[in-house]
Amino acid sequence: MPTAPVRSSSVASFLPPELYRSEAIAALERKHYASRFWHPVAAAADLPVGQVRAVDVLGLSVLICHGSDGIVRAFRNRCPHRAVAFLEPGQGTVACRRLVCPYHGWTYDLEGRLMAAARESEFVDPFDRSAWPLEDLDCRLLASLIWVAPGVNPIPLEDQLDLPLQEATSALRNPLELLAFHERTLACNWKIAHDNTLDDYHVAIAHPTTLHRLQGPVKHYGHRFGAWANVLATPWAEPTTGAGEFLTFGLPPWNHLLLWPDGRQAMIQFVPETIDRCRMQVWLLGPRELQPEGEALMAEMVHFLAEDRALVESAQRGYGEGFRTGPPHRLEARILHQQAIYAKLLQPWYASGRMPR
Image 1 (cartoon, one colour):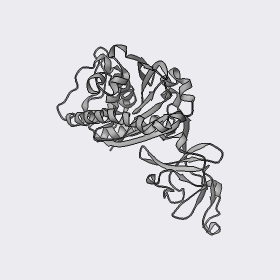
Image 2 (spheres, one colour):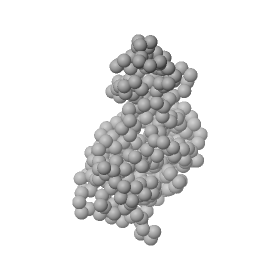
Image 3 (cartoon, helix red, strand yellow):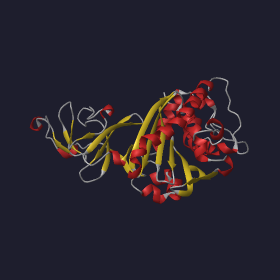
Image 4 (cartoon, rainbow, N blue to C red):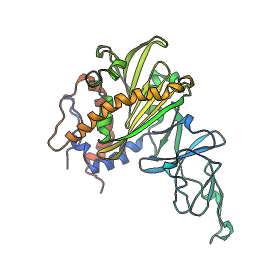
């Protein structure tokens, strides 16, 4: 069994590579790390009243429903009768007033109440509709995104977003439109992709004509740390918006929130698929007046994300037997911050030997 991810009090070090290639660790991450947090699943503006969408959250099929009462709710995407899904994720956003199970016709409203069951008078025992609501999950709207917590007693969302809410409260309260969405699979462990996006040591070298031009000289980098989130702040000067800061927040479990002074906001997440593959999802949000530029602005992001893709997939190939990471640089402090959170939540299970079977 590999040694536990214990950090020395005097020597800074990265997580051991063994944690990036273990199926057993991946199972522990899902159960004892990722399940502690909230996960963005959709842009709020992309789910109007009377629409539903099926999404996957940590292996759970989840229905996101925007009811006629204006409340967005999340439910397990399975009929309480025989567990058949109401919708499949590939169907996208669907307009409907009722959820009808395709198996036996049980019909629910978007608030999760059972409205009717086929041949209701013929059940073996007396049938009570109120005893069979949909299974609800914690669901919140914040920063123009819909968040779902699939685990029991999650860390409060305001804590998970502690530094963004402290530093950009008004920006995160403004309702934004979805400008563009992008996703693709990366051939690497999610932690490699997450580490890379927290890595401020590589930007000037790996992105000289893209991200580095946006973030500016390394000498102007500023780092700040909360209990759960961290941020890279760089000066911003643009003729139409004036001076400000471009903020790149790192958030557990595998999220990154980018805020521009012109009102743009991006959420990037790296969702595990296997131990050596993850799904990168990017929401680009902004004021309505930026909608005509949405695809062009996303194309700029995709350019530097493609540069990162080559790097993280190369790192994945190198994270084999016998590899040990080098020493952390001061510009990699945000990686150490997020890895410390990961180690703290995972270590009681990892160090105890209670490995999943």
